[in-house]
Length: 502
Image: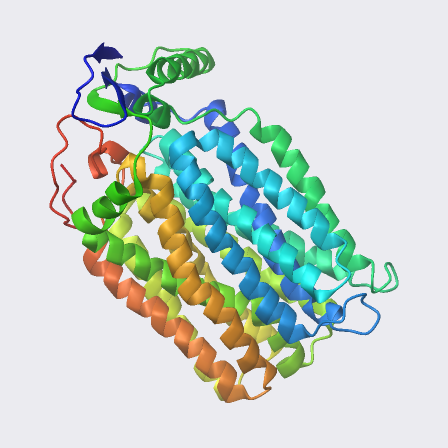
């Protein structure tokens, strides 16, 4: 890393450096070090899946007399769900800004701590207002995780594997959903735990799992890409050198030389004005793509996930304590989508895979709505239909996070994730649960069909947007997809879907 004079024209500059850090990271073979990154950062989505699924499955129990809370099922799947999502939106924006300013590692430790504290306090809820408050704060911590972790993952994983790894990590949410579904079966069994105890222990278990993740995450390093841009070039170089040495010892052979360097003007921080100008001024098509993908998946998942237990109990007479079995099957289908399709995002390509997963899931959802309206489905066949829909939808939804993380310059990455997550989720994730709770609570088949059709329409619309605007980012360096704002040869790029930003 070669330093040179600091240009006086750049506010907040700490120097100009030429570095090969990005190329050095991208040419690394897969190793134990990368597995440590995946485990340390990816496991938080398991907690998120556990949280959301648990609340959806215990909604019926919380509304029962003797639960310890004077709350209705609609309030749990509607108000509490919307507050959780609202908290996630606020947390993403707040912590996203801090992540770009103070680094990935500091923030993904802080956000996990916020989650742990809020979940623990949810477990001791004694009134609806307390439950609502700490559902919001739990979401606040999870939202911060989305911004801090997705940016760290994409900056640490080699370009050859970035697509599949990002999708599988985001898809691991559904491993938590499986755990939450099966856990609810045990916790809601009144032969084992009283009505006012089982649901509290479920939240408490989330705290225990979070503490384990916190111990593992201590070993995950700061992003070298963030370090060299923010005046910590020597730290970035030392970190990558130690990783290279470790991998060479593991593989028993030297690494190839990096094939490129980049010269950047180091900065302490990037202002909101420059971030907004970059995202919406230089990359309007990519901004449109990000919004479409997030709104589509947010409405589908937040609306349907929070309400599926109510559908089973109201329309198919499934007992509250048995809904977990059905949801575990659906969650397994969701995880298999990113797991089995993830590699294709790196080989077949982003544009084809993103557009097709959104369109196929939307079309299948329209079919499910029609069958449900005709009265042709049972609890089992309804679950089978949802498995098919969500196999594709989960891969598409995970690709939304991948897309906004990799198609904007590094300095804006965490804030871009936060912004599109917050705006898309606010549109689909807050309104979705509120509308869907009312529709399913009515007990009218046509109302639930309408909710399905809205979700299907938004997924199809997002798929069409992706067909025209998705960026061919597969196997390309992040700096090639979107040149850093701090690069000394950075020039305004044409916002095309196929050409790199230069």
